[in-house]
Image (tube, rainbow, N blue to C red; front, side, top):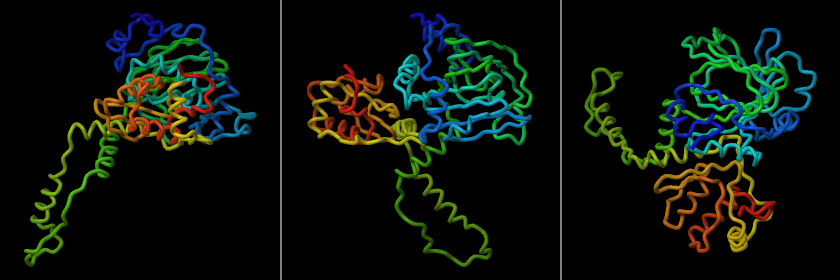
Length: 378
């Protein structure tokens, strides 16, 4: 099926020809694209404690980067070239979550978030390389994008940003509202605002192997126990007390050889790791929570929806939500739809285990507060 968002390509064609391979410019990917929030709303959001925001400036030949939250005075009468970047927009605006659903042909396990950047004319963050896949959707205004598949990744020294020292653009395009540029990892690129400009960055995480190993070892360490203690009852006098005994090395080798993990351990790790909220994310419990009976009655009538900040994934036998894991049962199958679509209609019959699970998520703030919802889901 042809997809205008992908320039007339089907999702299969896009994934086969471009994903993780080469850039794709898509004119009018989102016809008549409507801004999710304006400049003032973005500046206001950057003052929020839970919004990850950065202010990048270039003034008198010097790059600077500041972390939010920010105040109005941080933007008042600012000189030089600057850019405000706010991440996790989808955690605050349902319209942002709706925008991300256009990219549901890519696993949620790969999705990072929606970031919006604002820059006045000439603003940008400098030429750089990202380690993740990104769709750059132009909102209001225009932005000139230059890209290059260069091997020289030398950085400008003594700067707070990883800015390429020798950027040599090979292609460039001026993006207007609704246009979109897809970039795979490791493509050098530089975006420069032409007048006031808003850009929507839909990023897909690609952790390094080192990060995966580090996180897995931490996860595994918390769940793996080895009994026993080092012992050497047959120790004899040594000639060199500073030398590590061969017997000690052999004994420790045997202990470490007991470390074993299976595919199910990997599945459980990935689910908890990829659904774990970022450190700045907090969940609010309902101010006046419904009783379990009242919640289930309302949920059966209205349906349930994940909180904007929730991440829910699954494997064949496990459910994961915000870093927590649960065993799948036959009665949980409808929850796959909740994970896929972020909202679901409840079946007429729910067993006690599922009822308890949903109510627990509701109390934890993982689900939208059904008592304050402005409209029914179904």
